[in-house]
Image (tube, protein in one colour):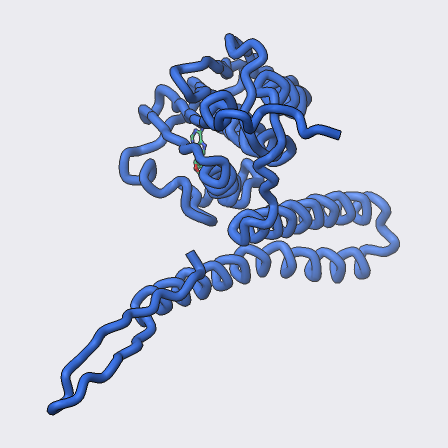
Length: 271
Ligand code: ADP
């Protein structure tokens, strides 16, 4: 992470010994590169909608006495503004996750409630596209330690993608079960799927498979990296299986709270 590694070595110089301290330059350099890429990507992602907004504002000004045009430009203006707002909030969310200041791992969170909330948030979008979202969860009252709002965002992002990359009238399955000391939440679609080469990269920030096609879905390429960071911050992982043209399954695995409880730790504090 952002901690600097320090190398300590004792070397012999003539008849004396000296202590050598050296910062791990390669690690610092790598982090620098990651940061630079991120900033470059954000700038790129923001430039397009910002340019559109100023062009549309100009067009709006020139079309002042044509109400039909005004309405059209105003509509597109608000679409671009919404896109800017969406990207901005995702960037902020991701920065927070990477700074690890968002996680309060002391809270017990019911997995079924996370799933229900995430499904509910996608109901309208699913309805508009006539995609059926079917939930099959057998987690009963299973709990994990974590931040409920963040976990809802993670599951929400997977369901939103499954709907976005489904064909109209398609079906999305949300399943959850307990397996040993972990809980598995799987989101399956029968949509366009992902090629093997892209599959390794979909969790990267700003990575989008087919720019032109993905653009239509209005995404930012940040959704899955938010999922990855959230899940990792909760001590879990996320996997994906996909077949181009057949569909995809994304699975989040989180350690169950019971497994994390140390003897005595679950007892209430005496008042
Ligand atoms: P976006 O905002 O573009 O959806 P994500 O980080 O959520 O960004 O996803 C990255 C890319 O992975 C998407 O642009 C899309 O190409 C691909 N992808 C994600 N989920 C799916 C899915 N369920 N089916 C097919 N492709 C997907």
